[in-house]
Length: 264
Image 1 (cartoon, helix red, strand yellow):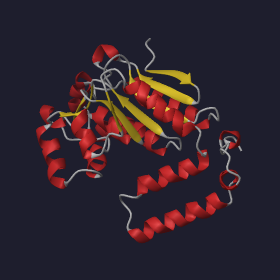
Image 2 (cartoon, rainbow, N blue to C red):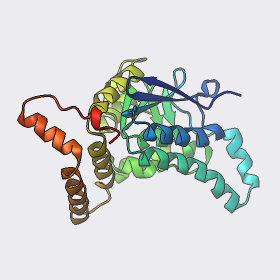
Image 3 (spheres, one colour):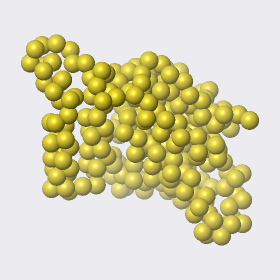
């Protein structure tokens, strides 16, 4: 049986590959279980500083398997909801991972594939890749948090247009909207994502996890709530060995060695 998630390591970067290339990496039941498991293992491994998520071959993810989705008409509402939770568990696993997760998108990300890409902390995309909410094309409504993720960087009017038309938008347009961190030539997204991830692996792991948490809450919190969360994380960081190392390195004009503190 084909492995749903391929795993390899480059330095301190863990690369997770959605492996269903014959179906443009459409989501499988194996991905629902395999990706959260792989993320948990990467999070627990002190040798992993950052994670890159990509698709096998030349496509990121085409979304849900429509042949499988067609059979859900026969299920009860409760049973359909149980099936849907597989996707939402996967999305939560990406969001809740305390290490940076970077999506490397070639080809396209459609439907739930777009949800997965936008759930990542950063996104690297080939300029010719396309992105589509897509659901309306087959009489379905968005899931996987995609409307929440899109609402972080587009107006209500643009969000509505994207969801009601299902039109494709290019990597270049998504970059212009602010959702793509790095835009590359075709075939170069994974290389660029690994380079970005490698840079992050040398940073302070616990401070980076706190920063990731702050960034995730920033769009839904009011100023007082966000400052409270900032205060909590700052006082934790001030007592951490990472801050002691970082401040000492700055004062003595040397490079900080945060990697040595990764498993402490």
